[in-house]
Length: 182
Image 1 (cartoon, rainbow, N blue to C red):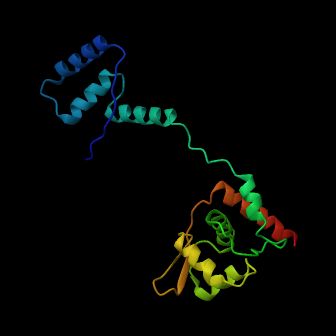
Image 2 (image 1 turned 90 degrees about the vertical axis):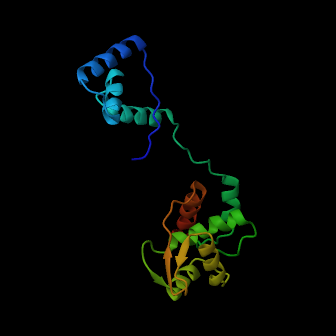
Image 3 (image 1 turned 90 degrees about the horizontal axis):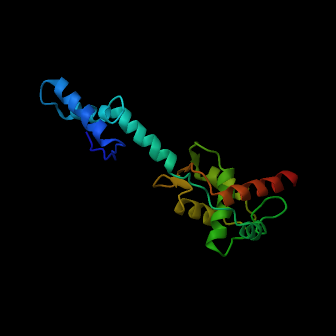
């Protein structure tokens, strides 16, 4: 059993000592480790040690602020959106790494989830999302960034499921709307 670090405090030390003393007297024998943990928890006002641990976990969860995503950089989004045509196709390879990653998320979204795909099929999905004719470049970048995984011989590809950033989700929606209009 792994060791659990659990903070313990009491508001009334005298009442705690009195309750623990009564528990020890009623026990009639030297308590074991788990029995002593349960006695301490009951003296502190909980039903048992598991209840004490659950209370501490719940308190920690409530005190921890929720993780918020960084705000969308709309200027970067607008600059990146210029790389896409009115039909939603990627027109050219972005010079900046951050813009490349955002553009790759758009291509990633077009690849089917949870399916093994052959190299030609993946190339077809990538080709359908760009106009500059270098599907191999895009495919390699997607593998390098962990968006696609492939077998060592490169015969089978699979989209890696993970949540895109808020900016990437916004770009996917904007490019998708462009592609639906055209």
